[in-house]
Picture (cartoon, rainbow, N blue to C red):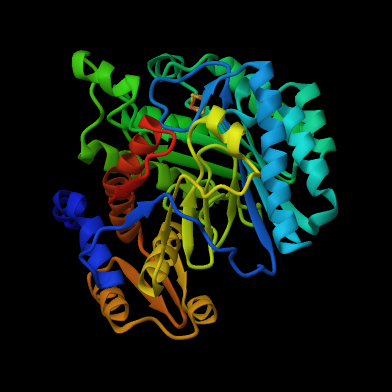
Length: 431
Ligand code: SF4
């Protein structure tokens, strides 16, 4: 009942939450501008973007392009130049985590090796090193090379174990290969393994979504993540769905799928670690840009440091041309305190847990009155539980945030990314 009330509100939520948390109606303004060097962090979290793919999937909104060796070599050199710029600007900073996303990072293990060899002396003991891997790359030679250069976790992009739905998504392998890939990664002995699934695929039933989660759990992976298919309007899939019989499942069906996924994961002993991820107790969590602060390296990579959020150019040739030469990023925006709090709280709601002690450490004060009042309302309506210093979203609260996350993607990310795809240097974007 509460969910039926929440669903129609979803498109309004990003604006309502922005006003509530940042106290402003003004739009977020991104411009091509110089970002002053943020204060040297105690620990550095890095995200490295590798945009190359062997096959371009029709639903994919990410920064990617077809692989070619010469471009990949030039791109590797550009990454190292950008990395060195940061290392020289701050001096040695211990690196706590490095995540390689894409694109298909696992198809260029040589680039991962080059980056890791550059970072070797900076890595903190126990640093997390994660790589997104494609099922076709889960071969002994690739996995050995990733292990040898210090990779600790793999996130395998299976998406679904159904052959019919793999075809619908335009993926270039079958369910048998997906299962073999899971086995190979597990045997390779990484500290952590995540299996990424997609649900709410056109034509998918609730039973098929449950079967995917059951199959992922059966592999023994420490983490299973199930993301809803969020349709970006400028993808080939969106164009296809306009003319085809297949439709995205209704909001009601999508909700039933998410409920079924949560129940299935819990029954198998997994704990919810975000609105869309589940971990076995004690299994390391694979997570990239949800951190308090991180630097993104590579084409299309975003960074969140100090008072700033910025994006590199989405164009690989332009990135190769400018990396390391001190030019401003493609777009940047300065975040005032309210926006920084909103950003932090957004990702903690994504985690389904808000630690108010951490908030005080980061911002030097307790939660502002408007946020406390909102959380009290969430508790009153059964969407959150306040337990001392910790606030947890209930399953209904997590469903609300599942709607918020999708509305936020359409209200902000889709527009920002579309502008950055249209032009390498968009100049200014207002959201
Ligand atoms: S979904 Fe992954 S493999 Fe497919 S095009 Fe996007 S980044 Fe490449």
